[in-house]
Length: 350
Image (tube, rainbow, N blue to C red):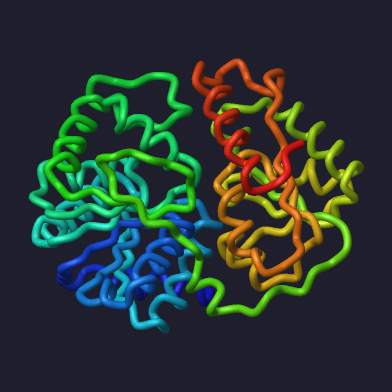
C-alpha cells in the first residue's frame, strides 16, 4: 500500500471519531485550505477552537495537494478532520449526518466554496452567528455579484438551474442573511453588507524566502476546457502560440486538466508539471520563470502578492470569444472579461 493510501485510510478512521469546535472550516480544495490557514494565522486568536473539515474530492491531484497541506496545517497546530464525502450517496449521507451537528453547534463557520451543494446543505437552516468566506478562485467575484443582485447562488458556468438548486440556494441565502457575513479575499470586490478583509498571504511569505528565478516563462494551465467553457483545439493552439511567443519552459497543469489534454501539451515540447501544492505555494518555493503566463483566474490577483518581493512579471492572457465552446453559458464571456479587466490593476494583460 502506498504512503498516501495509508494516510487516506488513517484519516478516514480518524473521521469516524466525534469532534467539535467553536469555529468550523469547511473546505473542499487545496486553495480553500491554504486560504483558511492564511485567515487563521492573520489573527492567531482565530485558531482557538478551530476545527478544519476537509470534504475530500475524488480528483487525485486535488487529494494529493490536500494531503500535503493537511500535513503542513497539522504541524502548525491545526486540527484537521478528513471526510470521504464523495464516495457515493451513503458516504455523502454519513458525512452530512456527522458534520451537520458540528456546524450547528459552531458559533463561526468558515466556508471555502459557497457554491458547493454539500456546503450549502450543511449550512442551510443552521443557526450560525458568523460566516466567513475564504477565496475559492475567481468565483468569489461571482458570489458577490449573486449576493448583491439576489440571484441564485450557483456557479457561473452552469447552463441550467433546477428547482432543487433554487430551493437549496434560497435556504442557504437565509442562513447567510441572518449571520454576520465576512469575506477574506484577494479579489477586488465590494458590498456594503459584507465585511471585507484582504488576504496578504503573510503565512506563505513567512514560510518561504523569495524563490530562485529562471530565465524564460512558465505557463499556468486552466480547467476552462474541462468545465465546457473553452474549445479544446483552440486552447491547444493558444498554448502553442504562447509557448513560442514567450519562450515557455514549464506548463503547470491545473489539477482538473485531463491526461489526454496534458499529453497534447507535452507533445508541443513543454515540460508539464503536475503541482503537488497550490500554485501560490509552488511559486513561492520555486524555481519559477521570470514571467508567469496565466489565463483569467484567481492567480491574476494572488501571484502578484505572493511574489511582491521579486521581479517576476505576471502576464494575463485574454480568452478570445472564438475560443468559447458551443456548450459555454451565456455569462461565460462576460465573466472571463471581468476577471481579465481586474488584472489590469495588478499585472500585464495581452
